[in-house]
Length: 296
Image (cartoon, rainbow, N blue to C red; front, side, top):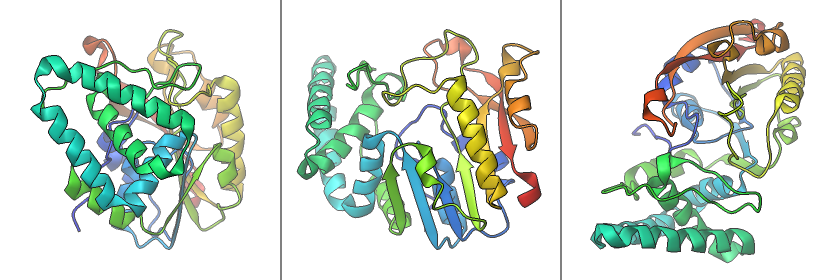
C-alpha cells in the first residue's frame, strides 16, 4: 500500500520530524492513541508500519474530526465534491478566485454553526478546500468560532489528491474518533498503549501566540495539567512520546518543560518552522521530544 500523507497542512505538522519520532516507537504497537491528532503525520506512519488492533484519535477541533470521519466513511463522495471544487477553482480567472474563496468560507461557517449532519461531507470538502487555498494553511477561528483566515491567491493548488485520500481511508477503517478534551482518552489508554501527544505548543514569545485552532486557549496552566495527565498515563505503563516547543530558543534560562518533565527523557531536536507570516522567521529551531523512556 502507498504511504498515506496528511490530507491537510497543519501548524506544527510532524512530517519533517517523523524520523526522530519514529526512533521512539516501541517494537510493537497493538493499541495506539493520539489525543491531539492534528494533521495525522504520526498516526498514518504508525498505521502504515504496524498491525494496530485498536486506535483512538481525538481532537478538540470538531471540524477536523468530521473530516477524518468523512475520509473513513464516505471517501468517494468526498472525492467527488473536492474534484468539483478543484475544477471550479482552476477554471476561474485569478481575479474571481478570491471571491470564490470568500463565498466558500462563508458557506463553511454557516455549515459549522448549523451542525446539520446531512451536510457533513460538504463541510469536510470545504474544510480541505479552505486549507489548501487560505493563507499558509492556517486554521484559525475568531471568538465566535468562525473560520477567519484570508485568501492566499494559490495559483494551482491540489485540492483533490484522490489517491492519497483513498489510502488514508483504508488506514482509518478501524480507527475510533472522538471530539473533545484530551483527558477523555484516559479510559482508553492502558499499559499496552502507545500514546503520541502533540498539544498546542507553548509560545516562545508573547507575540507568537494567536487565536488558535479552536475557541479554547492553551496556556501554562493547561500545559501543567497536561503534564499531570502524561505522568498518570505513564504510571499506567503506557508508552508516551510528547512534542512541544523549546523555551530555550527564546530564553536560555527558561526551564519550564525541563522542570515539568523532570522524570522523563527530554530530547532537543531541530525543526523548521514552516508556518510563519514572516518568511525570514521560517528557520530551524529546537523542539522537544519528551518520552517515558523506561517504558519504551
